[in-house]
Every structure is written in C-alpha cells, then in structure tokens.
Image (cartoon, rainbow, N blue to C red; front, side, top):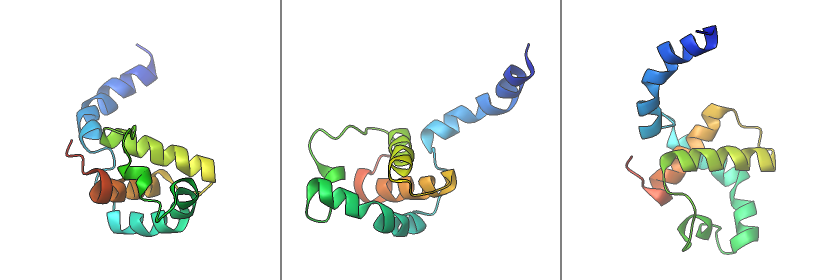
Length: 105
C-alpha cells in the first residue's frame, strides 16, 4: 500500500462522516457575518438587487447540503479574490447556514 493511501485510511477516512455532517466544524458564524458583509453583499446586490439576500432565498437555488454551502463559499472566495483562508470560508458558510439555509445535517 502506498504511504498516502495508508495515511488516508488511517486518519482521514474515519473523519469523513463528521466532515459530511458539519463540514465547517465549530466555525464562528458571527465572524462569518462580518466577512460576508465586507466581501459578498455588494456582488449579490449587483446580481439580485435589494439587499442581495435573494441569492440565498430564491426559487431554484442549487445548494442543498452544508457541504454545498462550504464549496460555494470557497468558489466565491476564489472568484472575487477575497483572500480568505479555509477557516474563514468555514465561518462564512456557518453564517450562511445559520441565517439562510438552516440545514441540519
């Protein structure tokens, strides 16, 4: 077995169920709210008008899990060059779930 495969099997594989259930762990949603206001709202207002929250509440939205929120947050971070580290993306994802999506698992 290759060393990386052994590492994955020994350490990462057991963590996958927890990651899927809460992919951002204990991220600070309040810190995420401030980051969201600073880097996300202006773009969402341009796209949807109003306060930009229609991005999250519109019919046909494409996110359906917590992991989807985290992945979309990471993609937006890259797209707008917000410069967030993964921990900061997690904070924004936690905020979005807490205030808009409300996914349990």
